[in-house]
Image (cartoon, rainbow, N blue to C red; front, side, top):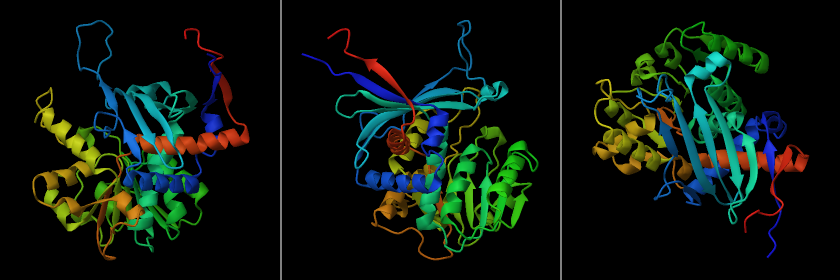
Length: 385
């Protein structure tokens, strides 16, 4: 029996840029296709129930083993996120990354990501690609895509809370769908933080139609009067500020992709609650409860993900399950989100490897069409048969 030769494509970051990874309009439509398939259950995630966000390696805070890696900073982990996505993609694969806050001292991003695409039938690799930009773009495109269903069409004031890479990509996508944005508010760790100033400069150069850019002193200032709020913070819990519902104007649309500390859960009953994957947040809550009420240092545990707040309300009987609306239902025309112009809409975007696969697949197909990338060989034929 003869075995076929297997080649696959390697795409570095420069290749990915040439293949259009930073194209906001295309990425938004790919995310729309992805959520449509999610709503039709044409996908698989990891785990025995095909609903796991991924498998994470956590490091201990101390160890008796010499040179053992420790949890000595926020977001110290390795993560593997396998998935299958059907429809026009019909692709399997995974995102894998390591994360260490100390990377910044080395001039590196906190997380370094790769995506692998595989043939569904054989498991053979089709592509291995740099994925920092891919992951950031698909994350930023999701709330912008959701905004086409949820945000008021005349939205003029956009607030970016956490002016890092994710919100920079989100901004690129928001500006594709929110054509009337004239004021952008920025909230960094402080008013004159390097990331806040860099975001201001980016907006000034790329979006001259923006009439005013406001660097905010507080979280409250960033939320007040904003038509659309985009939260993408990555901070330790002790540095988080707590959100308050009264800060948001009537008609505001709030997207959370990072940390949303909120303790008065019942307030959410006054809002329209939207999630990208209810089951994922339910699993997060279950895992959170299983870890116990206090951490290793004896401090009280608190969840800081918007979607978990919603699930908690359902699990405690404060709201019915159908009061938490699936974003995929809106995409597939099976429901509605905003009922009135004055509704405050809260939308939790946690992200799934399905989005990495779909956007990675589209970039891969474009790279093939343009002749971009490096062809690598797995084998001419396997040594052992």
